[in-house]
Image (cartoon, rainbow, N blue to C red; front, side, top):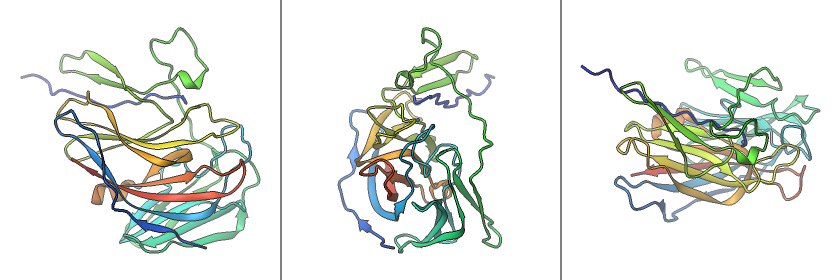
Length: 287
């Protein structure tokens, strides 16, 4: 009997990555045709978590501290409420909460802690005790090791971040490795998988992926590939109508419970260093 086929998706990138405004949207979904099992991603709603979220004017590793791939849990759902943590434009640590699906965001800007630097590695993250609902915050520390990898066909070390791409690697039942270059690229992404095994990739894409020092921003994208097609049919199924900075985060607890992509992402500021809106965008993946 053959050993079971083992597959995994490894996305290797170096990038290459108070007023409440709520809208209930009935826009047509973005649908990609031409393949069995077409996907559509529909924007269900969006709301501003805080219109005065922090942006750095300049930074050695970028300018957006609210939304980084190593910010493992910036947004989470617990017992019918959704929580988000971030830094306010004053430098104060902040936490916000709303009742799902569309309650107004309530915010706390802590007066006893401010950051006074421009290092986007020092993010805020949260965890919620499933038993008693205690909220635990981690913030302003920098201890996570990141590993980078150059494309295998690159002619030696390449420090041009705009030359880096997404790749899908898998091993078949004979043990042979395969590689597919995905037909799109962007910043460091977030991967989610549904119960059918289909994969969705959430990422920001910009014209310049070298976003250290200054962040020029880019559109929010969602791409999809189906298990039925052995994840060879990657295509973009959603593109936003505004530019965002940093890297989007996904409420994984809500994804697992409701299969809804609840995306935390910060709008590009009008000028470097100015505050801008931190958004929570709900996207429904349909097939």
